[in-house]
Image (cartoon, rainbow, N blue to C red; front, side, top):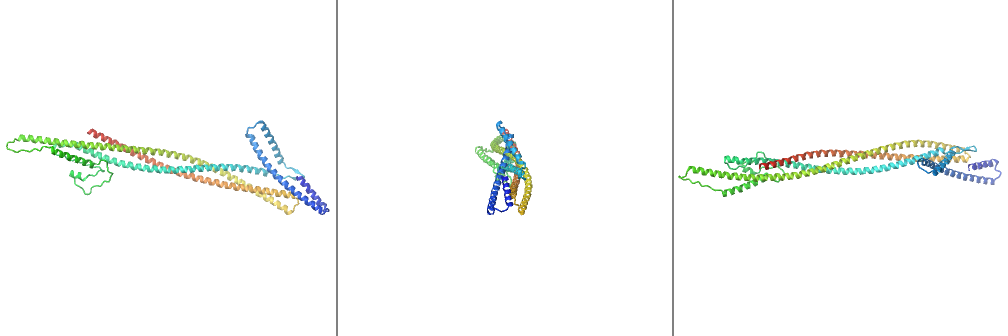
Amino acid sequence: MELAIKLLREALQNQQTNGQSSGSQGSQDLCQDKNRIRCLEQQLAQFQIESFNLRNCIEEAYLFLVDLKNIANLSKNHLEKLQEWIGVAQELRREASIPQVNSGTVVDQEGPYHITILQLKRELKKYQQALATDAEVFSEKELEIKILQDQIQKLIQENREYLESLREAQDTNRLQNEKMVEQRLIINQLNDKLEKMAKAPASNGASGDGPAAVISAKRPYSVPLTKSLMQMNNIPLRLDSRKVHTSPPMYSLSKVIAGFQTRNQIMMEHIEEQDEVLHYCFSDHSDDDDDDENSAKTGRKFRFRIYYVFLKQYTFFKGVDIEFIKKSQIINVQKLKNSELKLIAAKQKMNELTLNIRMKEELIKELVKTGNDARSVSQQYSLKITQLEHEAEQAKIDLAETQKQLQELENKELRDIAEKARLQKEFRKKMDTAKLKVQVIQKKQQETKNLASLSTQNEKRISELEQNINHMKNQQAQLQKKLREENEKKKILETGIQHDRTAGEDSKAKG
């Protein structure tokens, strides 16, 4: 077709050189020839575009089939057909790469631009796939980070609840310790009173005096001395008496003493009613020996009854003391069991907190690794963008040169229409290539910015997770410290219970 166009041009030039003898008929033929040349040029441009597209398809198919031949396991028949097709494609590529000279003109070579465009397309597809994969990975990591943040919030809330329960347990243990101290003081007071009451009958039997209430010098700090008891024991009242504010015990010493006094009064009235009153008759015939014998019998009888009354009172007081110790032991054992259950629950929660912290640390390591991979991909994108910018600059330079050549041809009013069309086509082609490169560069720059912003957000979230984990570790250390304190208080409570048991056994042994 190019040859036909050139022949038509030569014929047109010959007609122009031969003159314009033909007149109006020659001008009509000239217009028809020009129209025909334009149509042929348009067809030629269309055929060149189709040829260019077919070359691209053949090139891509050739590369794909070469890779398929090296990878896939094909049958012998298919392999032979594939080899024949590859051979034909190689011959066509060789023919396309060899410049063809016809009638002194060189055919336009588009090989380097064609290869560059194909390479850019392949690289663009590869980068688009990598970018899509990175976007999926980042979306998955964002979802994981959101889940981790929710779990951390739950753990923080649970930790607050554990701290509140631990404070309640500490308050309960503190109250138990205070009550244990009060109970120990009461037990010591009661033991002293029992010892003194056990020694009192012997001293009364030796001296013959009446019963006296024995008050220990050591007073418990939790039980105040009542006015009735102080008046009974002839203790002067003080205006600056100490005020004690404690919780009311189950068996206070004032109640025990009040009951003891009531029973003592009832028993004394009963003894007075049943007692025999001896009237001494003073006569001149009475003998001194009879008087001495009667007075001795009366003293022995009175002392025996006093001893009986004190023995009964001692038995009653001792029974009340033992019952009080038993009930106190039961209450303390129940409180100790509750404290042990709370400690076990707190230890279990501590183990869960440790496990969750370990899992969060492993997930943070994975996020850091993903962030490093994203940085490396971003660096590769930056290098590729730099290369594309250089290529775009080179394309702009080529475009400027082509435009300059086109302007020179227009200024010279070149009559060679085919050369002018070729330059215009080449200019449009280079313009499209430069625009495509600029678009690719802009797109990759935007993708790189997005990737950098995602990497920054990922680093920020990792730092927040690390701060939360450090906070959780501090809370865990505080919880461990408080658990150790609770264990020490538990040991003290167990020691106090054992001491109460020993005191109860000693009281039983003395009885």
